[in-house]
Length: 338
Image (cartoon, rainbow, N blue to C red; front, top):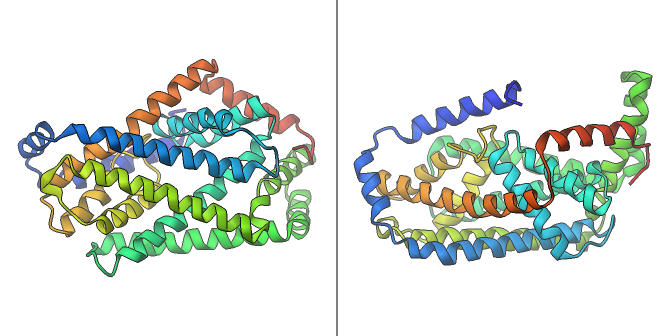
């Protein structure tokens, strides 16, 4: 796994972001802020975070309905496993992990469920951009973060538009990729490629209805507002980091956009640096901002990782096994299979 260039790129990016984040810090002051934080506020913050996880589970349930109706109680452990995987494995392996477990337990193909996961990520990105645009008139933001927002605006809105077109015109899309597969791939791979593409398109079914798109967007808004409330609860643990809720909306939007940049598992650095810089731009001491962001990051990372690891242990799963079986499924499944 560590031979992958993406893994090494992620590690390099994380190191660069961390080095920038810790410049000009007085580590003894950061430590003092950590020692004197009021950690009792982590209890409501973690509870609020799991409200957001519940909303994520409901959103995925809603998006999977055209493929198969699945009870929320059966989906929740799979969602936790996926987020655990994103936190401890490189290259967002948790998304494939989640798709694999869904295939194993519910019989939905990896390609189709990955399509729903991609749509989730696009709506998450659009929601984050909405938070940023709402907060920008009221909150100063460093120029380099503004450039990140511009880049991701183009990427997310462009990708979402493309997926809407694919979902609205599946037959035309199938003709286009059918021609490409026939003319660009060796014959022995063509049937497998057709199957993967067909099942992926079936996972975009939720984008064909305006009502379903609205429900996905409203749920995404609820998810990220709940996560911002978590930020607000953790903020109470640090009296020196008193900022308005709208600043936390901006911070939430920017840091989660930044975590789409390749990084080490757990988004080390790409989460922390943008969050610190936004708080500093609003007048919070860099030492306090660093302590707050570190605790927030840990409070986001640890609970879902532990719960997901428990559910994965209960399923008797391993990453090599999952990688092997996903590859075997895509090679063996005929075109048009669910």
